[in-house]
Length: 97
Image (cartoon, rainbow, N blue to C red):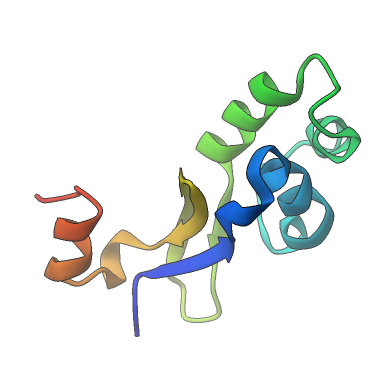
């Protein structure tokens, strides 16, 4: 099992946070409903990017096996589980320990 999964492709550009809020956020914890509302309004909301920064650094997902996943955006939006990442994945994403 990989410790990295793409959630939203970078082809969505500035709408990655909006897409995440509309279609992916239900599986994630530590996201305030008001923040989801801001993201769903899209990049014209003056708080969009500040809210996205808060959401993307605090959101987490615990899967059915008890693994904790976090968000990481580098163009694409990824779910990353440090415990499941291979050495190659860590190297490719610059997470060498």
